Image (cartoon, rainbow, N blue to C red; front, side):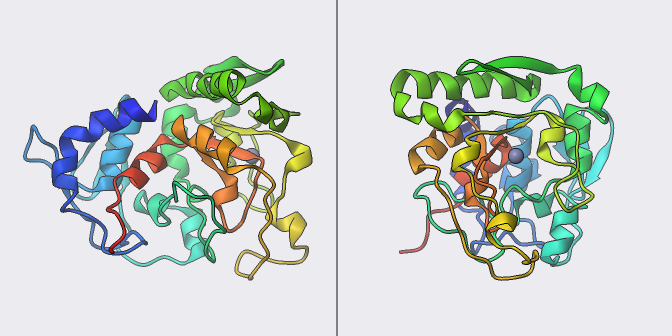
Length: 279
Ligand SMILES: [Zn+2]
């Protein structure tokens, strides 16, 4: 899926190469700009990634507001640097991209880097449903090596999960053991918080319970702002397969949740849009 999405972006990449972020962190103030090849419209790469990943829902940008197909508008940037806790509350769109998702080699995440944990709930509700009932209406069953797992069909999420299963089954049968006890849809808040989990929208799957590590369990008594120790038993090979099909891994988070894989083609695309590091 990501290859086709990258191809869709290709027309804009010539211009993207000179309209990049200055550093690893996305700026909360000055939105870097790109221009679509066939128009004079100027778009931040965050918007470009969202419009490409979710074309049925994200339809435009007027410099302040992200326009949705349903007629709603979401604030793109608060215009100020937000704290980690404020980003978790995620009242604007740009906060979702503050930490750039690190494709490539699997390394220990930097302090407080949680790409994907910042979710603008209004955007996810607009796409996947505002309630348990609405989300449930769009769930399909996906066969995960003998277990039937409900996953949303919206944005091609269920088909992308099927592609992961197919690639593992056909080319990496040694990785099938990591798919024991899969679980996915559950309308619930994040553990220890009042915001909805990605599992509420049918876009996340937890696998391999017996191989999993979770930051709170590995670091009893520690809170969000504390320094914690990192643990992960999932192989990079498996994480890379998920990423090729539009999923992010909770093993890439400082506040790790290694059994967690989440369909976030917006973050994967945004990562591809970053400039190479300076020599
Ligand atoms: Zn999870």
